Each structure stands twice: as structure tokens, then as C-alpha cells.
Length: 186
Image 1 (cartoon, rainbow, N blue to C red):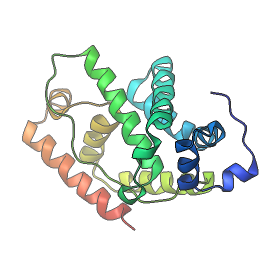
Image 2: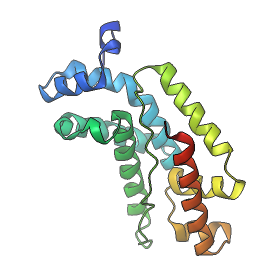
Image 3: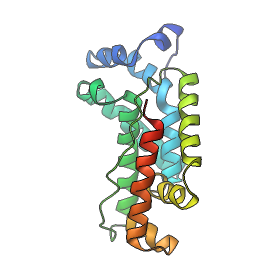
Image 4: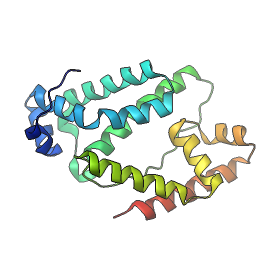
């Protein structure tokens, strides 16, 4: 996607850009792409470990934003949070298609961090908070969270990989998610 980034676009809020996308303003989509593509690429590359697949999904996510911008509800969370959830779900669906024998439901818990990520500085601060919160987890909890969220493994797959009982894996993840929610809540 080709985009032109001007200072005016960077100072425009996500909500204003979404309104412009609803009105079919391509420059608004380009501004949001410039703002969030690197964040989404990081998530997608971490999950998929396939640059080409990550780029395809990234384009799909922004195409979905173009088609369905009116569905975004800022009252339910931030735009980057919404985009990350869409990207993560698409990446995990892609992984599942390559391993259809695994039917267990994916992790249903999410940690939503309400923040305005309109600037790179705020984005870096948030990433620092998330990394710090992950570092405060026990090694077992952190490993389980990373396997579930970044590699897209199911609870059963994590248990198989780590050799831990399924109940232990579920407890670690549930406890870790609760800890992350407490740490990252405003």
C-alpha cells in the first residue's frame, strides 16, 4: 500500500480517520496504515514466522478496515487493539488451516489495554509496559502465554510441547492473563 504521510495526518485522531474512511477517503486509510502497519507486522511475523503470509494478512486487515470501518466501536476498545485482534485471529486461522487435526478452541481471554497509540512514542511506551508486565510473570506463565498468543498454540498443544498436565497449562494461562490485566489496566 502506498501512502503519503504528512504532519496533518499524524495529528488527526483515529476516530476522525475512521470517519473519513467511512466516507471513502483513501488518504485516511493510508494514514492509519502508516500509523499501525509496523505494529501489526510485528504481531503477524511473531505468530506466523512467514514474512509473505504476514504481508498478505496485513493487507487483508487493512482491506477489511476499508470495507468495515463503520463497524469499529471506540467504546469497546482502541483502534490498534481492534486491528491486532483481527490480525491475530487471521494469523491463527491460517495456522489452523495448516494443522486441521487440532480442534481445541483457541484461547478466549484477551487483555485489552485502552490507550491511544497515535504516536510512535506512546506505542513504544505501551510495548515497554507489556514487556515489563510479561517479565513480572513466572517463567512458566510467560512461556505458556507466549506459546498461546504468539505461536497460536492451543492449551493441549502447549501441554504436549511442555510436558505439563493440561490443567496446569490452563491454570498458568488464566493466572497470567489476570495478572497482565491488573498490571496493564489504567
